[in-house]
Length: 420
Ligand code: C2E
Ligand code: MG
Ligand code: MG
Image (cartoon, rainbow, N blue to C red; front, side):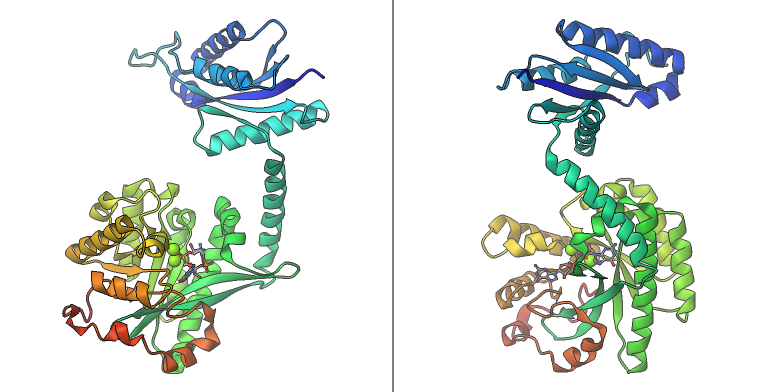
């Protein structure tokens, strides 16, 4: 059977051209794109405009080898050459394209299905940063259905009271002092049981409303729990994870002010924000951090070292500290480079007089290595796993650090050094 592909090509950055240079220029660009594509296609192929800046492609007589791939690459690359359309400053307009495709066979179905599949592949290209092509894979459809289902269930979970928090102690490994707890959300799903954030947090993060409602719940419940502990004579700082989108949203400062006011106005709390794409704009981030500081709330960068955050961000942001990502801690034993990264991050934080905490301390030896580097504040399974709030007082009463951790008294006068 003859193999063919259905493709959807979307121009990256076309909206910008339309907005900046007007629709007439936009139309001129589309015409040039179409004629360039037509020159590239073979007689039996078909090109059509699907609307806006989207083109539909029907590519016929495909072989089974890598020739197709070269052809797809050529189509995308053909758009990188300049077009005869000028920007306001006289420079030639440059764009790129994202192409999603599905090949039949193996794919099958009616035209609507095939176009929907090509569209899913297109989303994958956009997700990866555009300017490229991708082929539809069945798993894309399953992922989409799954994330739709999760989103609907998440919307219902909050009013149904299906979320709860567990708390993981944060300690000074050398002195044995318990400095606080990090609240970690869990979902008691009616059908799927007890779910950890990895099963749902990404889907929640993608929807501004969901991550904000979840964030409000976590803030409210963490501070309510802090008060309950206080009534039992236990003063604990709580660290709350806030999704970057919520943190930067307009409603966040109101949410924060509201919840703090409800809980007596002064709550020892740290916000942990994970460095993500959303945190690219340092000046916007700095404004949000300053507003938190005005309310007496410190912000630290979570999972430091994995995403966008660089040492420049430490220079430009008034963060109270960083939490070194557990990926580095995991490797400190066998990887000298990971050891070097952790120990230099600790040194940088000490010099900048901001706090440094490590997460993912799995065993005694990890802890010893970290203490040797001057990083005493930590959390991890070697200390305690996240647990329900009721278990915290007994855990604190009974916890003692490993002797090899406390014996290192000669590691400096670091009683309160870099503490969270
Ligand atoms: P995180 O904030 O970096 O939290 C640390 C994660 O590492 C937690 O996973 C914790 O259970 C796990 N962990 C702690 N010690 C160890 C260890 O020694 N070994 C290993 N392998 N893992 C350890 P958890 O609870 O599954 O949370 C995963 C992530 O989900 C969190 O990473 C955080 O980014 C996000 N998250 C959790 N709760 C919330 C929340 O309330 N709101 C938001 N927006 N995100 C949350
Ligand atoms: Mg965290
Ligand atoms: Mg982390």
